[in-house]
Image (cartoon, rainbow, N blue to C red; front, side, top):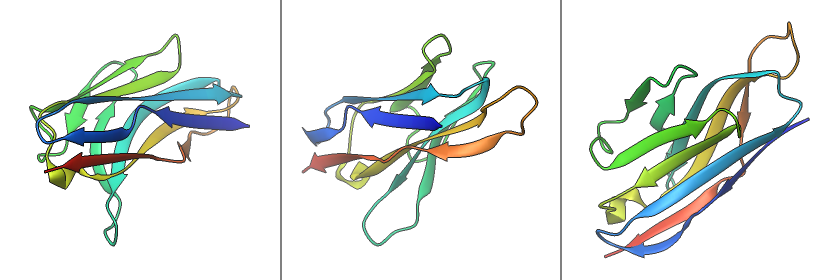
Length: 121
């Protein structure tokens, strides 16, 4: 079984910073991409940022220049450093990993349970 556990969410004022972490554990042979998504109330889940196993990053336009995604392959952990936060960043943030649980298995998508980020104005 594979688990993704997020941490680091909370309440912060406009302009503040937060750092999210997501640790993958369990039966993991190899992790390809790790990513962050977010979902505000009444809205669809949207892409935030992704990092490949080689370290290539891609960001949503709405967070470029403010958020930074990074990962520790040794720890099977992905981070999201969020600076200059705005009220519109308020969402539940979800971690995603495309990983192969066993040697020779296909890559599957796994999701964390989400962590709430609230930015007050």
